Length: 356
Image 1 (cartoon, rainbow, N blue to C red):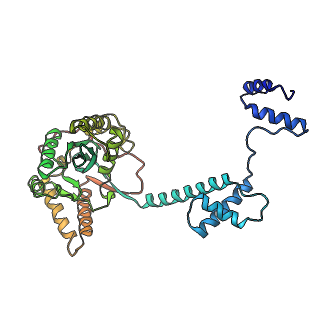
Image 2: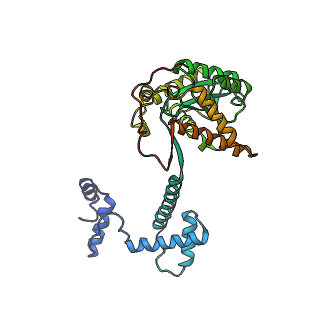
Image 3: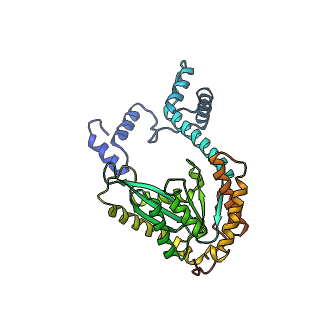
């Protein structure tokens, strides 16, 4: 190929799926009697990669876990007299790889010690939390009050509006009671003002529903509610900073997301069943235990558990443990340690409607 025949290089490049620049480079190498190299960057040797990995680890020991730029500068300061500087790309890749390995080891260690609970009957516990879904004006916040059945993952409450009062929460619970045939044995929430209002406390006491209160700034106390809020936010696009024209706009998005999550989403932890399927299969918890007897037994256990405690966080943790132990004692729940990778093994065949 003559030097002036540039169209030949373009035709060859198009025919072989390579760049015309690479074709011209090979022509020049042929003129110098050099053996043509294959396209692409030459492969870095395993020995060079291992050397850079050692250098990255040395920099982590000296500087701590830092970004690749600091690692590269530290390496090049030590190799100021080296003829060929260490590859920037290799430093980037190995720094990222070491960080990934450290994160994986940390996550595996946390998972191995993580405790969780499985519930075997619907309406044994409802987990509730409020989430901000946007604003109508600068001062007009819109929230969703969402409650989830911890056994089936069904959404039992999804009410949209301004921050709820105790009277609002009582109405939401009464509506869910009608829809599901009864209240839960345990209602789980945080210690927000409406949740601890006299209206709600009197209502739960009268209906013989235990109130499990999460500790402040401890999302692991109520992971099911946290997950449901995240799923609703992902499905609707709502959240902090969203400007809404009306409450009805947010309610319509929440209603659509609720149908999708309850009737369409398959849950790996529930044997790849949807929440609505599990609701139809699981027995109600108050058909397994007598509500009044369970309530009195759990209340007694809670009083014993908090005896001598003075700190609020310790008291709430002790009360939570007492409720879980009572649930486990009656076969309504089970404690598991580590990540649960198999579906809940105990599923009832029929879910009859209980008498409140």
